[in-house]
Image (cartoon, rainbow, N blue to C red):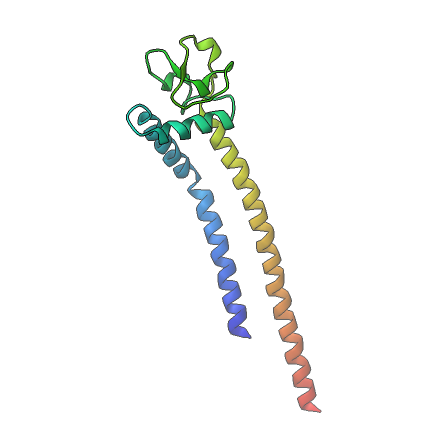
Length: 159
């Protein structure tokens, strides 16, 4: 019984440590995300259609942004991918629009994606804290139950 409680306490402490590590390394994760997005965007012109397709889907699904940090990320002779344009619906990742910036979204994808990830991580952290508290209550109640059983067993042995 004591070993089971010890294991439960160990796992609970491990959960807390992982949560703290995730919170501490949040900025490092954001930096890595920005670098990966910039590398993918830089390969937009030189790689297979897969990078183009991913960017087109990302920009069209998470509406109203273009590039990593904004429209200036796209330097293609003043043209922008169709998914960056306010007035057209993206139909093919190879199609371009422009050159006027007034029809192009102004915000970059990193800020919007980062905001969504932060909101999602706050929800996950809240749920994790709730589960950890329930587990802690379970540990305390298990210890109290074990103590009560031990006390009752000792009283029966005295009789």
